[in-house]
Amino acid sequence: MDRDEFDRILDKTIPESIARRGRTTIDSMMAPIRDVLNRRVFPDKSLTDAQLELMVQILSSMDTDKDPEAARVGEREGRIASPFIGALAAGFNHGIGRSGQLNAPQPKAAGASLMQQVANTVALDAIRKLGLSNMKAGIVTPLSTGMTLALALGALRRELHIQRVLYPRIDHISPRRGISLTGLKEVPVSTLIEDDAVRVNLGELETLIPKTKSCAVLCTTTFFPPRESDPVKSVARLCADHDVPLVVNNAYGVQSQDIMNQLKSAVDAGRVDAIVQSSDKNFMAPVGGSIIVSPNPAVIDWTADTYAGRATAAPIVQTLSALLSLGLDRYRDLQQQQLENLAFLRDRLAAIAETHGQRVLDVKNPVAWAMTLNGLDVQEIGARLYNARVTGPRTVEAGAFGSSVENYPHSYIVMNAAIGASHEDVETATTKLDKEAGR
Image (cartoon, rainbow, N blue to C red; front, top):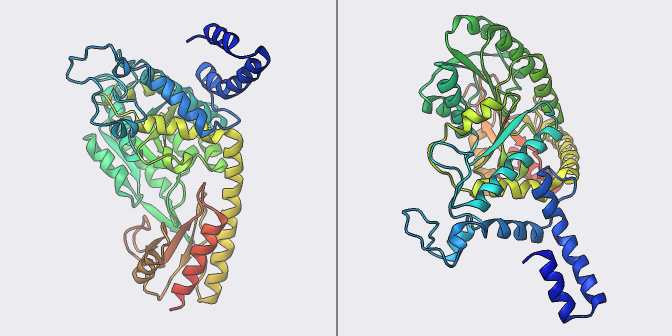
């Protein structure tokens, strides 16, 4: 039903003044939806849940499995066991993409194809507005961070014939599995302890880059203390000097203005091929999606061409909905709250450390602090906090895997105050830590 037909129905059934008031309400509801579909940008103001639901329903209704007159005789026709099952993918039962091309329009899924393109452009605009204005292209993937890193590295292997990945040590299994999945060989780069911080051995990386044939570099902006961010600007310059691709794992770095400024400078100063960030860690969507951006549109095309088969639409529509539910103004407010909570966490841990003869590690991290637990049973403290309904802290014994270096001298606990966490979360968690550390 178009607008003129709707107006005729209103004019025939109710008084003109009442109809005019009704149109005002509808226009107010539809205006942000029209704006998203027309301009495809990260909006300043967030959309309401009702607006998001209406937009998704309109788009999913365009797919052929919603056509009541369709004769569906293919092997994949968006058939579902119940309406509840369809709702789990927001009605996009055909998924997205086509065989061999994640970003291709799908004939049976006009609405899902449109939704996917809107998601890609809104996500790219969000990344630009939040600090990376020099990005030229982007795509939302239906994969979490580690698998999206594998997708990007696989694209570089196929198109640029890389065979090895220089990877500054991070004690995290997911990216290493991503490298392995692509069939590439991981070349570890060691780390150094400098005061409390663990940092990449940049001199070793500088030596390895020209000596390692057919290589790329995978560096990391965000990880748990005591590991600090890789110096992405310096690494990007090295990669530019030696014509070596650089992929950046920016898992939860979008929320940090400082990290985003470093990345922008890295792109301006050197070579950065792809930057991958998590949808859930940065934009509070359910786990399962990532946003990959690049200053080189060809890299995004290569990455889209690397995905095998069609994909579920669920992480795409979830990421789009999360972005629109936040909007730039609300996201800026959440960033400010995150900084305040991070400072509060530091103060709380410092007070607790003084009480128990410990100290807060002097490590720069955009969302977390670590406090020593020297001489204490760190595993027991971690288990007690879990049983006390504190989720997310990370305990590591001195010298154990997790510190991203050999023989780290302190046992410690890491607590996060990432975007979306509340003041009450920090207060409750640290109060329980104080209790458990004193047992």
